[in-house]
Length: 393
Image 1 (cartoon, rainbow, N blue to C red):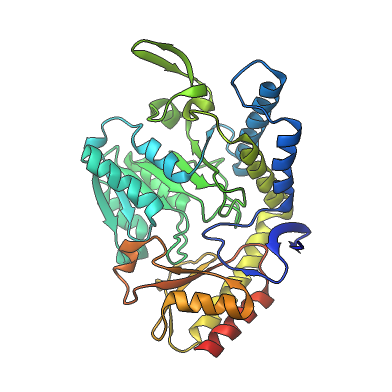
Image 2 (image 1 turned 60 degrees about the vertical axis):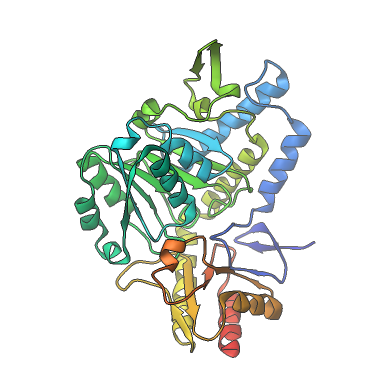
């Protein structure tokens, strides 16, 4: 099979396919796939579990991957831990803090289930209050947050780029506000990582989570969290066992003091190694170059969609947008549009409720089509998409 090449890198997208669903899953560089294969051929060991050469090599590969994540975000003082999914990381975090009954979670209807369901779980288990930001609140987000943060210990749970309609949030300003008001910021960067520079050297939220297989272009079944030192010390992990435990008595266990404190069981080191390679690929290409490239694609896409009849672009006036566009249709169901795109020009998109029911309840449509780009997409691909949509409509 022949894969496409962009910016001098080969990606796991077959030639002839137009992949515009990167907000669901990004496509890996082939070099990352090769890293996984090399791990199984050359190391094939379990990290932390013994004194064997295999285990030692696996542990070294895991530690190097942590270092690569820190370097990517310029966050030398932080703690990096790996999980199978960001949902597991967030659930573990929400159930690892004390006094959850006294806390309030402030989130938004623009968020997807990956953030909202764990928050609702905390509410049902501990009675934690949830306060939802509305579409109107997003227009002046800092002021809205100031009004909703009532006391120290409240948790602001937001994404840096909304998967529903591509709204970009100023996470640095949000982080500063939370620190000034004594609130905690839990930030999901899954949709922003890989699309622009994220620098945590000056401002680091209390907890950062990310899927490894979306913007980061790593394998499925990888995710990570980054915690500031204070949050790391204050969290008592819900998930424990395996290599995260260094001592255990009949009614007592003692956890690792390293970043593996949050990593129970045998974690997927081969995939983590591949993820760190994908981050290096992104850095090598240049995140500024990627951001400028995608900015042109999105401007072209948004302008083109506005000119097509029977289609309404989802958005909020005056907001800054990232590489995600969603639209509703007055004539056809979203799934039908997605099927036509794929049948006619082998275009892969996302359709349905986008795992975002609270957002959908505010729309006049029952379903939407979502188009999301990454560095491997081209202006020619956007032109083809717009031509098919215009002809179909």
